[in-house]
Image 1 (cartoon, one colour):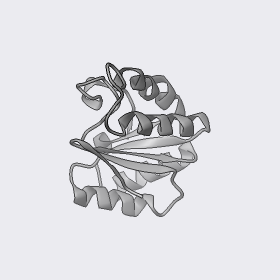
Image 2 (cartoon, helix red, strand yellow):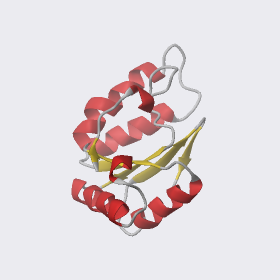
Image 3 (tube, helix red, strand yellow):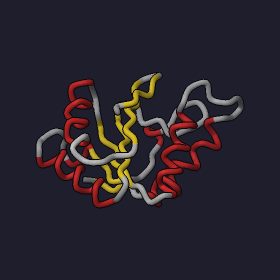
Image 4 (cartoon, rainbow, N blue to C red):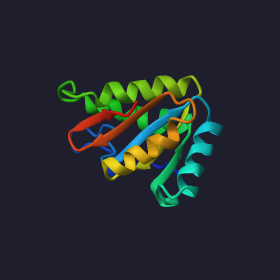
Length: 136
């Protein structure tokens, strides 16, 4: 499991908002829960260690939340990307942590959620081209 670092591939070309196409962002009430699920995904062969990042509440607040400033410029976002980032930020302020998991297709996304649904989680969003899908 990798440490999260925001890079240009995780942001929208227009506005620079957080939009990691081909990934799912799942947040948990604690970092321990996120870490445990991340290891279960790897050990269960759902994803490999390079396809999952542990995202601390500090990572969300320091790296992801600031991307909202650009996503509403020059016009407010027509989609939900800014609202989704704000939801992640609110959860991070409450101490929640997350996983950013590469979910290249529907099959992998469902396998990820099969593991995730075994524990309490806060929010699960899959970023596809032009749509953010709620995985609840």
